[in-house]
Image 1 (cartoon, rainbow, N blue to C red):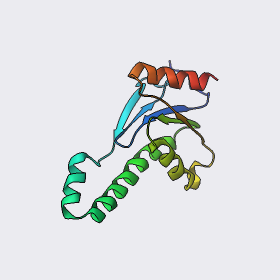
Image 2: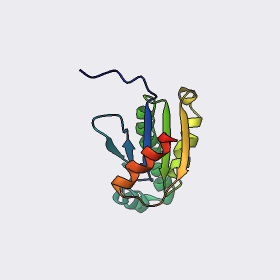
Image 3: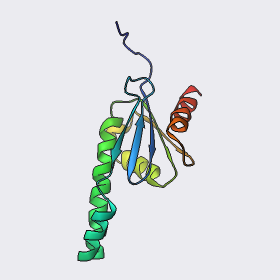
Image 4: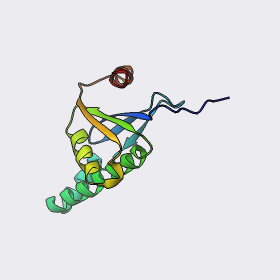
Length: 129
């Protein structure tokens, strides 16, 4: 029998602009990845048409990527965004514009390039504070 977890639901997200690894240390399937649809091929194709189109396409696809992540975040109480790039801050700002996230504690931490085990350890250490 599985006991209902009454603890705070915590999620760590190690991310850049192309993919986000979502880490829930309390779930059976510890982590999974969400990938941005804005690939090098998409960028190259859009650039052949016009630079303006490429920027619009990138912005639209980036917003879709952040929205996919946001839908998962809604199920949690405490979220850690971490990674090398500005993507974590961009996502944080994106979430702050939406009132659905006002009661979710969202933190942003810088992190170096980490292995999968180091990412899990980073999340574990952060939430044990």
